[in-house]
Image 1 (tube, rainbow over the protein chains, first blue to last red):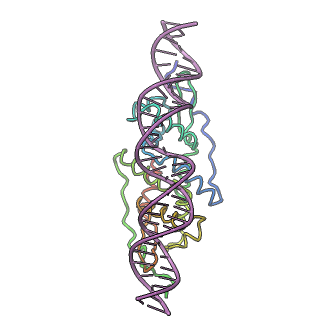
Image 2: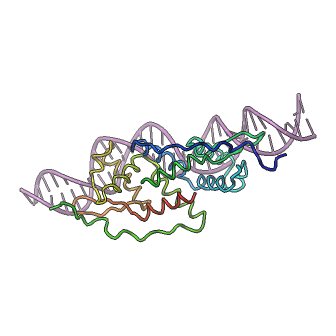
Image 3: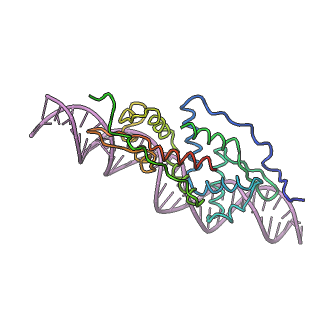
Length: 111
Length: 111
DNA sequence: TGTTTTAATCGTAATTCGACGATAGGCGAT
DNA sequence: ATCGCCTATCGTCGAATTACGATTAAAACA
């Protein structure tokens, strides 16, 4: 019983607003940009967006990096709020936080 | 005699295309994101976008950073292709490279 | 020529990043 | 309870960031 339907990526957060204060917007944009300032992290985001359902260590198979390195990249993405990681038994299910991506797009569009 | 009409920001580059290769796109997005991964650099970009005409060391007056620090941020933005710096006598006139910003927006939108 | 102004570069120090191997912890299966 | 798989964390290393003051380079102006 596990075709799909993991316990992951469920509520789909509402949607974070773009800060009215410009300084605040600059901080947020810089923080999100920093999270995507590495090709591996961009790859991971794309992987997670593509597979609507989430992935686990499949990422490790996709990227030419050590497991520990990828774990650190995932940590940075999570700390930036761009992804979420839910524990599913022995493995961890990561998925995109759509609201955060939308916020990033809005902030970039507002440049 | 300097109302405006600097020799800067003239041709307005055509428009760089989004790479078809995903790896290439990831590299470019990461590089551009890195250039904007600092609040001061985001501020600078906004300043240059706002003042269509370009600015010089007015940036130094706007930001709470030393002149040398700002010069380094400008260097990073220039190396990323996001801005251009034309020498105008003793001062340097910086302006946004609209094509690069457009490319960045397109890459982000394509996430 | 000499002075002032403007910006880039140099040298330095503290911090963070990026990558890896090794280790530890959690959970399912035996 | 033990074994094996999966992932996070730790410790380490070299390289890159960020910031600053001091210095240099170039150009306008006296």
